[in-house]
Length: 129
Image 1 (spheres, rainbow, N blue to C red):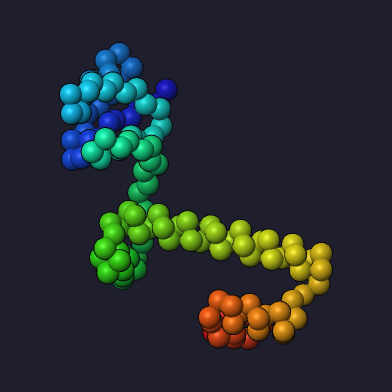
Image 2 (image 1 turned 30 degrees about the horizontal axis):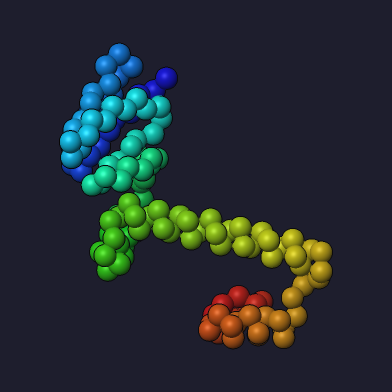
């Protein structure tokens, strides 16, 4: 079994199979044995996270850091939101493909109505401009 660590704010305490280390959180004692993930605690709220190391071109990395700063988010939070957005869009695209396979392609009126509802301009082939 892989063992992780417990992070409380900026403090990180290793947990091993033989001796999980207790931490004192506002008078409460917390011992954690972990598998492949990390538990991150902020105040009294603890969540399980999956840590990644990503590599990207320097210009893209700078743009991501700038976008995260503009959004008032951490780079990690911004990338997690971008990944969730991408997954949601991929699933929506797959659902629309199934719909069109069963009922035929969307017509211009349907695409125009959808674009109007979303408040976007329609480009070629029904895509947002």
